[in-house]
Length: 199
Image (cartoon, rainbow, N blue to C red; front, side):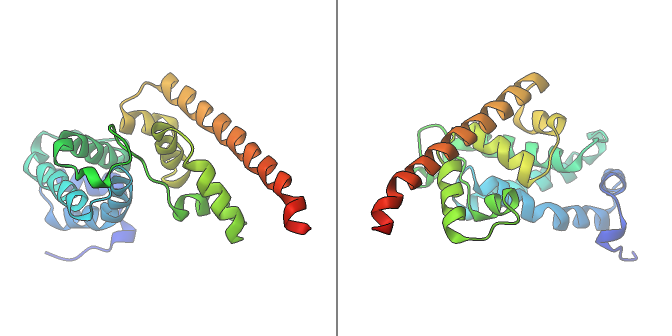
């Protein structure tokens, strides 16, 4: 079978051909989405082997059920939702040492705030933004990640997180409001410490 280049084939075309049993297109899908899926999954549970196993399970299940899978308007959100479902289905296997609370954590690292403050690269600002993001509740961190890092629109976020559109709007609004509030408190703290730093 002739090889195909990843960049020349749309997600919808890959998905359609994979559903028809095309292994080459299926492998392109895996290569295209392995990294974003891993990055997203690792934010729920910081267990590399577990997340990779879940991703493998998602793709294995897709291949085995390909004849019964419908066309999807967004392959990316379909795969992220499938991974999220798989991770929570296997929640009892999570390593408790890797969890921040009894429910689940959603960790934010520098790659997220790099996306949100593209023109700013000063380390102090990056650290302040990281601290601000990590003060948000887990679901607000997750929705900001999906919106600004994965560039998903409201409908795709609703699909991934299992929410209705209005809940996505509300949660995103709350996340942005809290981000502003926490950022303002960080700035006030910095200003209050400024005389001590200068003198």
